[in-house]
Amino acid sequence: MISAESTPFTQWLRGWLAILFLLLCMLICLQAKAATTEITEAELAQGQFSASSAAQGQWQKVALSDVWRRQSPCRQGIWTYRIPVSIFPDPQDRSLLIYRAGNRLRFLLGDTKIGEAGEFQNQDTDVSNHATMLKLPAASQSDGANTLYIQVAGDCRRYSGLSQMLAGTYEEIQPLHGRKVGIFIWSTVAIVVVCCILCFVSLSAAILYRSFNALLFGITCGFWALRAWLWSMHALPLPYAVWFFLIDLSFGIWMSLICILAMRINHIRLRWLELAQWITLAFFLGSSVALVFGAPPLFKALGIDLVVLAGTGALISIMVQAFRKPAPGNIAVALAGFVMLILGMYDHWNVWMTTAPDAYQRFYFTPLIVLFFILAVGIVLNLQYMRAMRSDAQYKKVLEAEVSRQRAILERHHQALAQQARQEAVTSERERIMKDMHDGLGSQLVGLMSLVQTAPQQQSEIEHELQQALDTLRATIDTLSPSGEDLTTVLAQFRFRHESRFKRAGIQLHWRVKPFSSTEWSSNGLIQFEQMIREIFTNIIKHAGASEIWVDAGTNTEDNFLFIQDNGKGFDASGNSGRGLKNLSQRATEIGIRLSIDSTPGIGTTVSLYWSLMRKN
Image 1: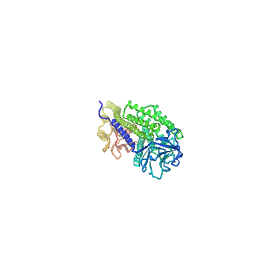
Image 2 (image 1 turned 180 degrees about the horizontal axis):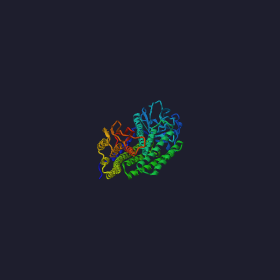
Image 3 (image 1 turned 90 degrees about the horizontal axis):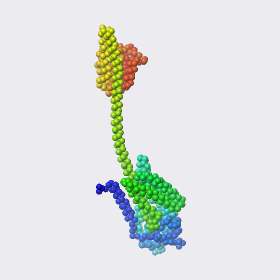
């Protein structure tokens, strides 16, 4: 069941149709004529005449509008039209409105020059795009001027000739002239401003987003703004041939590129049709250049027809696409293109083909309707951009979700690898401890067994060996399961378990240990650290022959430190170190401790350990 509520697209379409209808109604109303006398015929003679030389001319009656290039042969140079002033209803208030005339005009009342439109002797002046108003002086009984002469200078390359005219009072003619000039000026301003804004926005988007469609749209808007600006001139800033060539260039480039762009944004991939736009554009530009060098105007008309024909094919393909796959974008372009095509053909018919008397002065719709087509294309580009932005935002959300998922997977893998590394470290340490138990505790027990069997009476020696074996076993157990994760606790536990051993060995222990700062270590790091302490004290007991040991530990501004000093016999630290010292150095390197051994024979040895704050292995 179809909902009675209109869709946003329907509302948008109705709005555009209403605007277009109001614009056409306004133009029709502005075209309405006041109660004036219409002049539809005049006498014409080739040459430049006034009242004193009129008898020399070969005058013929012609219908207005009189378009020169529709004549055979085409008129060139200066021709003079004349009309009787008796056609003006009020001899004291006489004004004349000429809808269109080209290219330059001079007005004479009898033999007296009363005005010009454009610089009559300047061939680079062109007033054919503007309505012209002439106010005649009030008639007097003595002047005897009863004929108005209109001298027209032009050629077949231009819109030369004379349109129909309106005769009446100033109050009747001036508002009509003001409306026509106002329509022309404001329509031109609207086209130039809108196209320049669209050109700037599109070229900026093309640079920022590297969009070829935006580049094409910006170029087409720029060239149509250039054409509208050039077409509004009548005092030309450059030679006429160059001026008109630029107008043709702007039209041809706009027509071809806008059709290519319209096909692209509607996803019409007909390479032959796109190639036709480029070929007809090249032919059109060639015909315009040929016209500059004197080729017949018909040759240029053929170039325009080919461009329009290729563009018509593109617009038809867009309409077919809109019918097959209706969507707001291609329907908008198809409707705007259809209206532009119909009114463009109407303008083309009036300019080049029809023999209707008023065709020469009819309103030219193409510049305005082209603006609607440009806006329709711009709307489609904007819709596509908005869809792309929404798609990009959705893609970013999906990408962020995928990144989060992958991050979670990586974290799980990292945790698994860390757990595996810890397990491998524990396994490796257990294997090492088992080897130490086998080599150390095992050999001690075997020696003790031999001593018991051979010399059971040596009780003190057996007790000493048992104590050493017990100490070795305790140290091994400590390395397997360190208590806590703080180095201060590790040192305190070591002292508790081994201080009695030092006393039996006749060694006095001086203990000055302060709490460490930020000493959170991993289990493997604590095991390695405690093993280093055990090896240091074992070496002192076995080899140093010391009577006192000083332990000093704590924290300074940069490091944690531990000093172990004895008053034993010392050794030469510069010589080759034994296996025990090499193992000690290797352990220190593995857990990031800076190890320093300072020993002097006969004085003692100091072992210094440093490690950075906030260290976690």
